[in-house]
Amino acid sequence: MKLAEKIKTKIGVRILEKKSGNQKRIVTICNIQHAKSIGLIYNATEFVSFEIIKDFAKKLSQHSNVSILGYVNSKKLIDHYLYRKGFDFFSRNDLNWYYKPVSEVTDVFVKKEFDILIDLSLEKYYPIQYIVALSPAKFKVGIFSQNEKHLDLMIDIEKENEQMKKVHEEILKDRKKKISSNEIEQAVEKKTQTELQLSFLINQIMHYLTILKKN
Image (cartoon, rainbow, N blue to C red):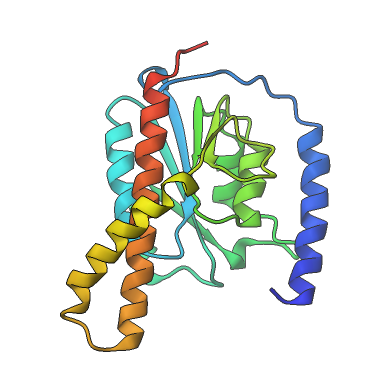
């Protein structure tokens, strides 16, 4: 990250801390069976995530009203994201100077009082953190992070990294037999890792949100 970006992000974090510190939110534990509204927010930069999120949302929508927001870490939305039914997206072009989301779709999403808000980001991105932190959602779920202050339930996927690594290597062995280009190999490896981690995170979230007892 460039120095200018670091400074802007640092300013943004301070502003967010002040805003979220003034937020009044009563945490209400809610499981999947009782959730009438669920918000999903995720890093949509890698298209491989789209199909996984779509399948997850389809399962959730059998019992709940599901809203989905994806962040594309680029200055424009990629063509294959346009007009995706049930999905809203925002990009770096929809951020202000310190990376606060300022689009209509993000304004609508951040104001919804979801029964459950699920952050499916595998890495921390300030625009997504901003929305999660200021959301009035009753119960917030996402990946474990040492300094995370805004989630009510966190899933630690690091504990399963060794097992995922073994599965990852097995998948790559099969795929590399058909691939000769190093550049393509690296792309496949990244895609496979994203698939494994995101799928594992979703499975763990579903497990815990199923066994949780409603307040």
